[in-house]
Length: 341
Image 1 (cartoon, helix red, strand yellow):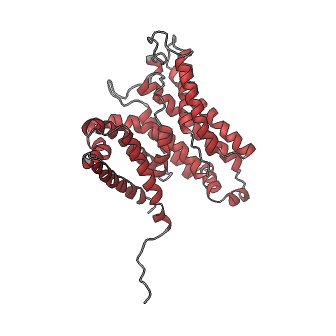
Image 2: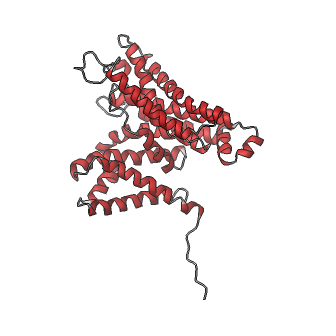
């Protein structure tokens, strides 16, 4: 049931969505088909699916490592934004330069920006015992306001007709496409590589074992010499770094600049991805594709079925609800019991 329950949750989400939208006067079957199946069955949708799945997978991988250690980083959205801000800072500083090194420098800045933002809840958790759930979540809104200030103030494009946005990135600052004219950029295969690396680290290294032991048996971890404080720092910085890298890849890929519309909720959706993948790196790839399908399918359904944009959030919330509900099947076996005579 550990691996079957996510499939049950998806099926229940589709069934409930069909009933709800039919009751609201929409074509419920078509809506569910457009949301979950059409993006997977139509090859022309696959590039867009990959573009949306890549940041979800990268962020969810970092979150899952922390969740295994009972470190609940809920602020990946803020770390995603701060990574984009840090990488964009490098892009603006090198705007008049050329060279292959610029994009790697932006990526490094993105990782460090996300790690720096995650270091705040790590410090508060380890030194003052402040819940990282609250601090990481609240810092998300600080990061978004910082983004708004920069794109409407000092980083506003002087040639942008007063729109709140930065300069467009140059070719040396943009993720290269895998094929000419394609939406598929370098960040997509890199997300898969990171998933494989995360699996190797979690399953084959002492650090991965320490994360599991700290999460499952803190007393045994202390007896074995594994530091809960060190693990907290490690997992939060890893999650922040991967979220920051995902943010930079989005800024240097689909967006090509920073705008007020940059925070799209990937940091929150990645929490669902992590649990849908059962905190397993390879399962997270599957979860990322499923949640990316709801984004792509939601755009399709707005045209075909005239569903509101909020329907995407509703499907994602339903999926999380049923995913948590079906967890009971992991712990308990459902059966029939004869009543005593």
